[in-house]
Image (cartoon, rainbow, N blue to C red):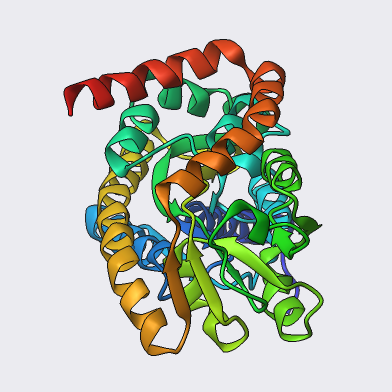
Length: 340
């Protein structure tokens, strides 16, 4: 069939419009389908919180927005996923603050040893001016800080012996997060520090490349570390919040209503995850004992000895990472302690 010029032009115009409509539809789908990735298991509180976030997004958007959950490091370790969020290939992740200290050094202060005594002190700092102002520093680096979820107080596990006193840490080959405050603190306590990605940790313990590690109880249980670790010592040396960060590249594609929806869902998921995490801290201890781990408390006087041992390191780290911010955080902690 021979097309006359006007008919050909109309056909070409119609095809162009169709392709444009298809492209716009694809862009709309991509804009409303988010990927959230993290290193913990799907049944860990982080995973349960992420699934709650996905449910809330779907519910609040009447099904127009969806979240795909990628747990257990399937899209990479923490550092890789942070880079992916900045690049927009992953839309959201949950990471410990120390991993953001290269972007904004104040985040490192959350990782100081023996800083917090309980969750009330934690929440006062995270939800107060110091914590919220820190979140705003991420935007120039391609990240939107949505809030803080719970990770819990960290404890030492190992395959050698119980940690009952300061001297028991000396010489233990312990995996630490690749975070300066954590590494320096455990060096000061006498450990043989091995920085490793969480995704490599189980194998490292199984092959005895390291003697042990330190993590909150829920992470120890859901990652099945009880299969390769015998001793669990309740040192509570660090408290780990979790920073929920969103890709600014994705954020910039959303309108104000959609952004408010994401923020609202994140805050609701945050409250849910904090409760789940803190409840699971209790149940995980019971479960780990049933799995055969030998669990021991550490006497308060020994915790105080550990605190004194790391004091010079803490003072050096505070001077490096933000004395003014540390003063703000300590002021919030003091308010809680004075009210008790």
